Length: 232
Figure 1 (cartoon, one colour):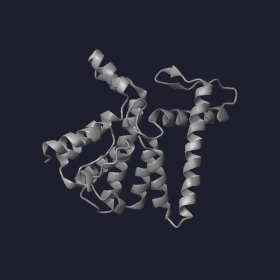
Figure 2 (tube, rainbow, N blue to C red):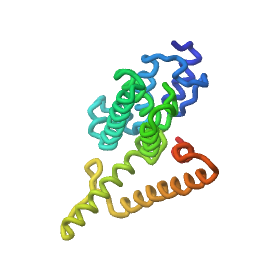
Figure 3 (tube, rainbow, N blue to C red):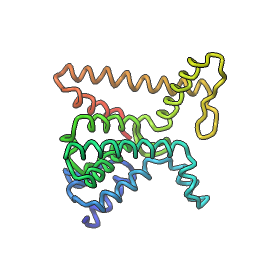
Figure 4 (tube, rainbow, N blue to C red):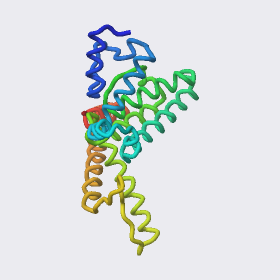
């Protein structure tokens, strides 16, 4: 377990999704499922909209979390990635099923919230899992949270905008609208979101190629760029 100083230090680093630890090995130093799961809960809370937390507290209604579309997208990204990575780890005989799920959940939450805590040596995992974790850094947490990344709302609007354009290709004379959280998203908002996402992708590609030009391999270069671009 942790002593008082370690508990206080890690509580600050968890809620703020800052990821600082009193040990070089991060939370893997403790090798405790209980500590990891407590950290997971508060990393997730720190990566959710703090305005939503206030609304839930004021109305005393936990159902507001699920009514928020961004939160649903966030949880969906989190659970899908956790199951996918856990399955890959299990099939590659890295751990037994439950430890695969344990380490997958922790690292997915740590990456998507941009916290940076470590529970296992994920750099030794299959390359596809490392790439998925890097992608999760770009997904990020919810707007109005302490998490970094592009924010879930931008990813959700971008994906909806892509499907909207596909609809227009199939039905050129159709009249469609994009809605988020029950509200219509105006065209200028969609354009600004798509421009932001394009700039993030373009900068990632350019800087990754520049780093690879110095002799770094692809994953090392990409992970370095992701770590710099998706800070809190």
